[in-house]
Length: 207
Length: 344
Image (tube, rainbow over all chains, first blue to last red; front, side, top):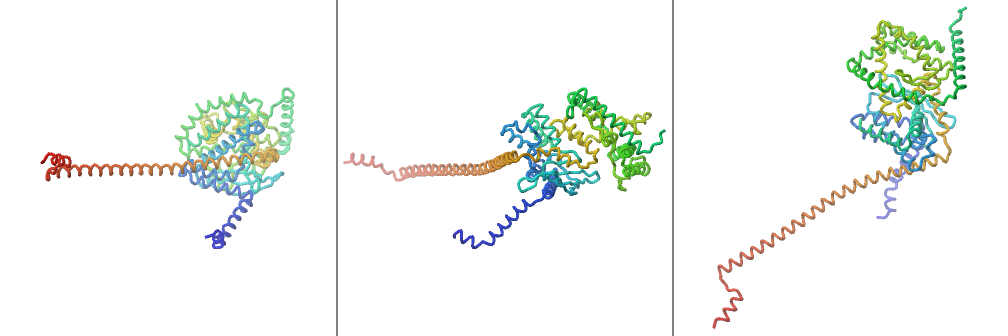
């Protein structure tokens, strides 16, 4: 039975699979900034809904996928250390990005660990002067005040990625940047990595 | 002489405050250059540590007892009561900032909760669409254009700023009815315990998540104050602008980051593959071990069986030989030969 015979026999199936693949690739590329944010939020709610049944590891796996596919982690890690990025070796940069990513996943798994009917709703979006987009959303908590979540987005290749989240006016990126540059300048790179690793372990143990 | 309307008082007040601030900032910058945002950091960090100690050994245990012995519904009532009293200060600052419409709503909120809400114990106003606003004199100063000034950590009180926070807190204390309840010290103590109890979740979050709680608190406080002063208008855009240079960095840097990310992704994939292959190897190894054990067992069984058969055969042969010897008594060939040789 030759390859040619197989192709001829199943040519329609091949074409169907191929068209589905092409469609899915295009769909991923065509996701708007708003789509990226809403997909991330849906996945976050999904991880929260799992709550204690999923456990820390279960929530971690879910949020890892959600964050990796929506955030520009390398860029964020670069920004939070400010000008000191230029002084780091390549190995240090890789270590920083790796630990930073783990800390983000752990934080989400730790603090978004239960679900009480919270929902995200889209409000609006605006373009920034240099081609970025800000997506405004509301985090609605039953019997409590809404929290404004604004997502700062930047294009990465063909897709939009989250660079910063601003909750009720408090910018996560600016906050982390202050904290990380401060620790770096006061205690050095090894101490920063040590502190990050401590938090990662702490988050995984407490949940 | 004092025949001025509210707006004129507001303009004069603003002018006085702005002039005052120009004077103070002018003096400060003449004597010594003010650093970026936290020129008193060493002092602030010491006060921060002191406050942490007070909180750990005094405030937190009191709040723990309060949270344990007070039912949630009662705690909510106490919180509503003090929030409602605080609305006096909110309305004053609404007016000082020229927010007449909001001031009218906040007055209505105070009136409804003080009457229908039984002295503010129940938040009835939120059910008629009147949300709680946050206004204080520090914000008013910010709206009037007074800069925040250097960051300060005050003993017992916590984060503040020199030009907005300190004068703001002073005026707020004077405009809060609780301050005049000197005959009822319990009310003042309850107010402080309630405030600390409401902050518990935030303080716990900072304690757990921050790499450097002092810096985290300072940054979050400064951003939150700015958010209140601007009523959240343009905060995201301002934040984007502030970090714009780094977010939209040079192309060469983006290429470097992409290359780094690719390498890290490859590492992650390799690590996953390694875990998978190790698991697979363990799985296969387990089978091999079982197979090997079975093979060994089989060989041993075969050997045992062969040995057993050999022994059995040997025993049978010996028994047969003896039986033949006994029954037939046939001389052995050697003996036969000897007998033949001996016989004539």
